[in-house]
Image 1 (spheres, rainbow, N blue to C red):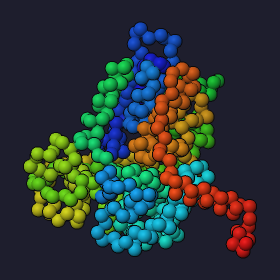
Image 2 (cartoon, rainbow, N blue to C red):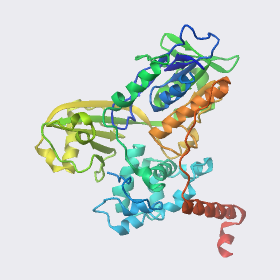
Image 3 (spheres, helix red, strand yellow):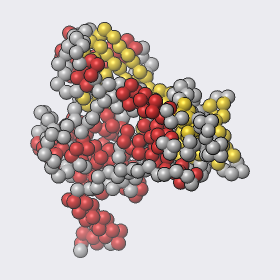
Image 4 (tube, rainbow, N blue to C red):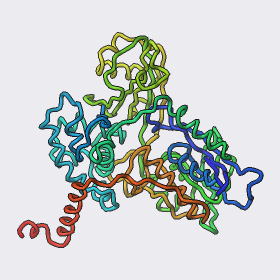
Length: 473
């Protein structure tokens, strides 16, 4: 959790660091606290930020300072989505199958990230959407299904079509370079988060490594939050940002009768979360892995998985005689009860099916990280239960990649942006400080914008004219 005063620093309690995996989606509990310096004006306001991931640190950062998927960067830019059709190296995927992705663009064009669009597509699953759009079974199984499992952590039949369209548009079907996968050249915690925290500590932030928020203290006279309860401790502040993820927030709600009595918070208890397991393996010899990042398909399992060649990604491993690989299994609740050796065996058997050279290699070191309930499950129909960045409690704000916002980014980018949005809401609420500048997602290309304009006009006509008469005319 972090505390920020505007605008001097204040405590951040109950935060989590992402696990030191490549994409840092799964987190461990830690906390941050920033106390005002002795010289600070004691009348300055304090802000508590629960969470020390992308969203939490983005919010704290701004408040304190007030105080195999294709790589396109070397390719000529083509209009969306033709880069995705022309450049990817899918050797077993014929052009005729790729072309069946074109009708999916109708839904992508119709989905403009508005509240209306989310409600329209949230009731159906991604698999239903692709089937209705005429997507070939081969294209769905080899490209879209793995992409959905890697980004939304569940198979297409368990994912909202709305969430899928948002993800696909941002990562695959909008601007060509959005599909590029940029990987940290070392552990995310070491390369990004630790230096980030140290820079914040120099500005007055104090990191609390074991503080976990358990509930909120509410002033019923003002209908405002008066403090974050962390076990026996209560951290008081003037404004609060909850950025610690859905599952921790659900625990806070369950321990807070007042929050349970508020519909917007009670709704969050209807949402589901997904278990993730990350396995880091050291093999006793060099193994040639064609691609650094791999999203896998072709296995009849309820979970999706990816693996990364850390030997070619991390600077520290480049000259080592070993091969270091990290695998991540999503929707992996059935793997959680297994012991480490069983999980490592499962990961190794999957790697062998992809690259035969793993069969003759021996695991000489291993690291298994279990992250139960670590990310939101975007089930069909879940949108109506989700939360915006502002709440009915005027001094309580929420940030994270699972909340509703209109920026149009996704995953870590969205988490970071919602952190800045939360910081801006705090500045606005307290009436002190400068607003963070949030860079807008690049606008639609002209042909996409024209198609969306035509689509909106057609939809307006459909609402004015009975469906049967629309075609008769």
